[in-house]
Length: 634
Image: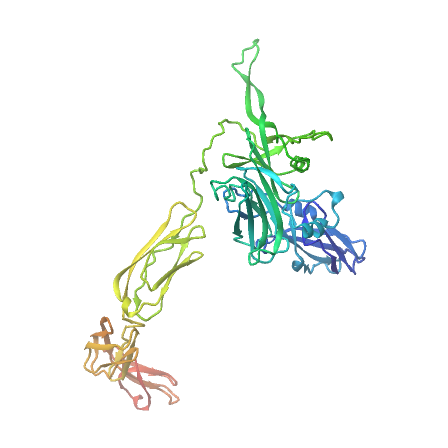
């Protein structure tokens, strides 16, 4: 089985998105079904999800499957951010691909074939079915015309302070892109504004296209803007055009009582229509009335009843007109707002969702010389409370649900050693990402964070030696509060690199022990105090202590100083215990002996069986002479 025909690389969700699966050789087998899994992911492949698994009974070796309804239901419109950058990636477009397999009664476990390499871009939109012919919009229209995603005619008029978007489909580009704005003033002078895309890897962009949004009104305060054109080109070579110029002329008429309605068009782009002049506003109030019993029950008297309104809300609806439009072509295109499923009005810096409620709209007669578009709309919400339309600002709900960074445990920075790599880390709890701020540290140290783990690394030099070196760092995330870690550390030239506890020595047995060092060599030993039988010598990166103990002593003081560019003092003790002899009975029979166990002064008489050994001092008895001496033991 294979895919013999795929949808076009770019496909509208409101038009057929068809796959043809062919060579289904086992379609006649008992219990044969074709399984099709539909996957959706972000542009670039992230956040992949399985949307749907279709099970189809094939009637022949070929099956045609249309996934348009799945794509349409999974794509969502989103409002572009007026406060964002000029170039914004649209998210009403996703990548889709399929996996497919067959199952039968004899082979009920599917083995899926993935078509991830043949993924498509699904765009929320479409063109009328009579005009659709196997993605002819993309195959013929886009490639030939290189348009922005708008049906609005080129050379249209806009207001000097209008705010709106024009959308761009990154159809073929795989190179860095730039937006070119060619400006012409009434006096004939020109200018050009070039804006490089901050990210050319997306596919659908909504571009802020109003004169103020593009910064054109501020270019030359002493000039009047006549027209400007937008085009998309390759950053490295502006002669390589990906979208042909689209021109706006500035309309200097006085606009009265203006409202701006924005909406998604059938191509996945964002449009705007300006409503001017008189607007008729209607407040539709609805309420629910309930009846309940009230008062006392008196035999022979009528019951008292009360009525109350348990729910009450108001919906505002509007009637307006675009006013005079320069061409009937503009009026034709504005019909699209009558069909849009996603529209909004820009009010006091916020986007208010609206429904266009026109049921019957008179557009024009063939004899008309002027054109307009009458509209009726209402908000998508109802209100049970009232406030005038005033700008209350962005505000907040008074609660930050973000969990601020918290240091786990009680971390403490270890001291550093000159010439030795330093590394320490601890973890934080709280929401990520976490950032660092207000950092105080020595120059040799790097403080970094990865996820929830903060690390302190670096290698101090001899010149970085010191004590009480301050280190502090502030941890921030989405919470309003931050967390600060502060500590001090010392940096020395020498430190002990291992155990400094002297092991027990035994009387008469040669003894050796080494203490290892780290830091900047050479190291110098001085002021050594220890038992008379012990010598101490520095050898490269360690101190060797050696000798043969001649006296039993439970606590022998040892001290010394080891020096580099700084000094390090040591003070401790060690002990010397008696050494013992180990004897072994291999005579083939038991032996009666008396001995004193190591570490005691009390003799013990035992019968030592064949193959048994014993460790002690002062051995005697009838069998002692037959024991084999194995050496010293402790």
